[in-house]
Length: 259
Ligand code: ADP
Ligand code: MG
Image (cartoon, rainbow, N blue to C red; front, side, top):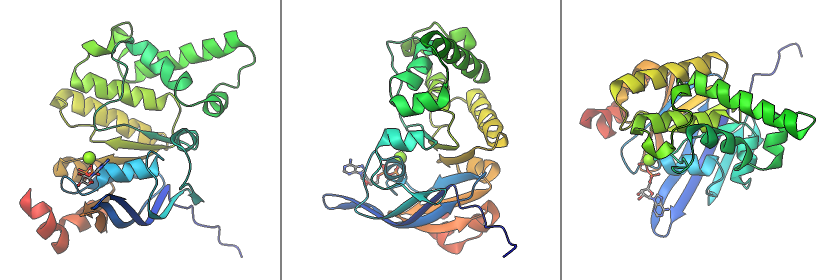
């Protein structure tokens, strides 16, 4: 009677299956992402990691299985509904608008993509002028947070690979997500910018946001994450804290041994 109910996980995936024609990309994956964690999702190329992100974010619909966000089933929701529920996601190849300025990319992330409900939740402002001011402020904050302010007026097409990843993270942050899903944020990013990106991810986690990141650099994952999920052939081979994963014989045989 007196015990308070445990907080549901930020994300819980159960027996998830997704096939493309004859290929089973996700084959019974089951795992949870603890609220407040930085969870690393690792596994060989083709293991089904990006497809799993597509399923969670409503880009794809699973053939079977369940997905819960803080206990709430979300299978069948459209991407903008999942975003409005607090899930922000970056792609392996950043989705930015090359012909727009950096600042406009951020502004458009809040207004152009997600529809009324997300926007209203963010800006409970009375007039159009109030709303514009709130949007401008949020763009400025996000530019500062990511050290992108000096590039605010540059076309996104002029950015380096690493700067594009920062900008895409900024686009995701415009909607104030509680769960951040980052697909290979460090891939193709120079070491200095990777450090800055990881430092910002830690800051976001310190604010209470849960982070799931797909990453090939196992050392980085073991260093940065407090929870690890290993995927192999579409299913989950192991989940647990980094030290447990590194000592897991099945993981070593299937993945770590070959790295
Ligand atoms: P990972 O991100 O772990 O490298 P993916 O989720 O991208 O793996 O891919 C898992 C498997 O599903 C791969 O065999 C891939 O070729 C296949 N796959 C992914 N998306 C599609 C698609 N849209 N159509 C057909 N096959 C796909
Ligand atoms: Mg991938």
